[in-house]
Length: 237
Image 1: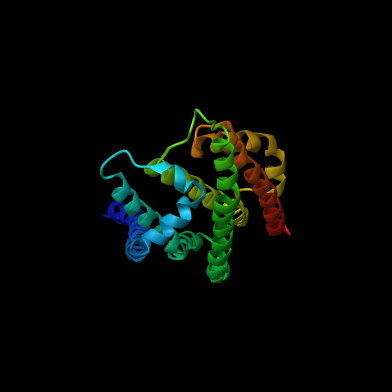
Image 2: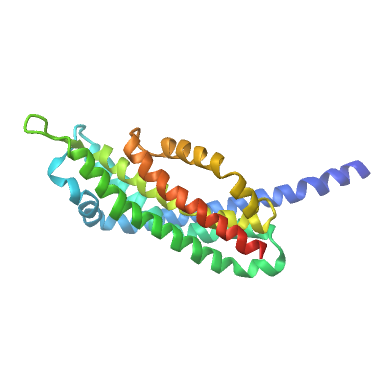
């Protein structure tokens, strides 16, 4: 009996964590679905904004490509619209690992994450994507004209936008890790060379397979790493 009671004590907290995780995921999924329904109502406007830099070069080669890509645009836009809810659910699940006195800062973490995510998305959409598009279209000649598949272009744009949005969360994540005592500013400084290698590997993984896009991703990540060192130093003080 004593052994069974001990096993129950060990398994109940884990069960509670899974139930809490499921609850957060369900709420996030509902938020994305509702937001996607709203964005689908304005998908034509969103598509015009996304495709404006290359609209004279766009084609679709499969019968259902335009329809399915419109749905994809609505879902991705829904994810962006629902991102504040997703952030709140994510931090609500993670922050109980901190001290009770620190849990009251959940709204501050959500707001900070939202600002960094929005900055990353904006930087990708207004800086990185135009630069990369102009670079690649610059190889066109009179005999070599670009024609871009609608679905491939949307995948390219969404991949870069979400990648930058998530990468810009690095200072917040490091701040939390420093609060938990997992990393420190001294450790991050000592690991700078290794971090640079990991950054370029990560950039090569989450960007399209060309060196230009990878460098454009790696440079902001290197800057964010330096900001993360400052964030960890703030925790130390």
